[in-house]
Image 1 (spheres, helix red, strand yellow):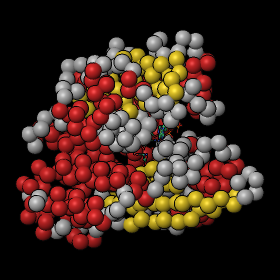
Image 2 (tube, helix red, strand yellow):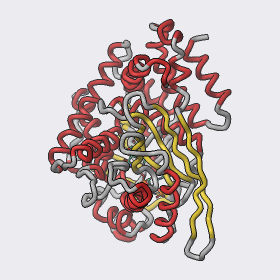
Image 3 (cartoon, helix red, strand yellow):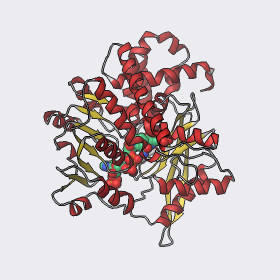
Image 4 (cartoon, rainbow, N blue to C red):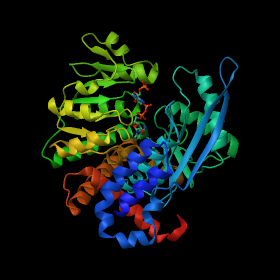
Length: 445
Ligand code: NDP
Ligand code: 2IT
């Protein structure tokens, strides 16, 4: 049995009930087979793969808070500190009822390779809670965040572990979390990213994941003699990543015709009016179906099904495993030629294999959504220097970073004889730096 298969079996046996973690590990190990087989003795001698798939530490804690009826609620809180070979743990916090340890381990594992691809000194981590911010008052969200941070503050720090946002955690939550960190520790430091602009945040961080997705998509299209202008695009989700992916895609001349949330999707043949979506989602915290009432001629459809909308380019920007094999086949049959992931692992393994076997172009999230965490690292840099860069400066660095990531993953795919397979390219390019740093640091991690 190959070393990679042996490690995958070990992960399944030792981490029961964590299917998303198994899925993420399998995809990476399958990609790494080429590299590992060529250097098997070197990696086996130091048990590199055993070490790579085991998080350095998982912190799990109770989060009690008082709701508006005076009742005490209890949620689960976690931080998975996955790998610190190349820098302090870095990665978002997710607040969503589906959060459990296995999902955070998949996200922390992916983050390790993504952060390596940014070229910046950040390790991999992820955290969160099964708390559901939907329908909660501001005061309830604040009470939850304060309790969550009171415990988490013992384990994080600007040079140790730097959380940020993810699903259910945006500017409001980062503000409440930051205030409590400062109150508990007495430190005004860059311990979180995605902060507000008046208290240490970086320009462009809000837009960074979505903009970065479009920058790397644009780089790939140009490399294949295609262009974004004039293309019809479908974007799932209507949160932070989706909104700014739509904004940049529209700026570059694409026509975005559909967006969604967990209840259903809207179709607007005239092109999505992003000002309306922002008002619904960022200001009112409402549902995407309100768009249909606000924009005559647009249509709302309840349920899944956004991938049945005809498009040239599909951008899954909501959540894991939201695009399955049937969806991929439907997209292809309708003429879709390009899929780029804004979310983390939104495409199932079966769908990914189908896409890679067809003539479609595919960009995996760990490369294509890395602009968010990359700009977080730029925020950390500005905090350490106690200064701030202009919008244009940060945007330019982001663009450069995404072009560089495209060059790295495309080069790695070529080096290993799988030109155009950016899944394999991203996994290999992300792995090489982490593996080198782990080996150099001995058996410390
Ligand atoms: P938001 O909370 O801002 O938005 C999430 C969007 O996805 C909402 O429209 C939400 O709908 C939808 N969604 C969430 N869960 C589900 C589900 N189970 N089924 C269907 N729809 C769902 O999160 P982000 O935009 O920040 O994150 C989106 C994705 O991008 C995630 O995979 C995240 O890990 C990834 N990502 C985020 C980065 C960032 O900087 N924020 C960076 C890199 C990746 P509803 O409101 O109905 O729940
Ligand atoms: O998945 C991700 O890369 C994020 N949610 C962003 C993490 C970060 O630290 O900015």
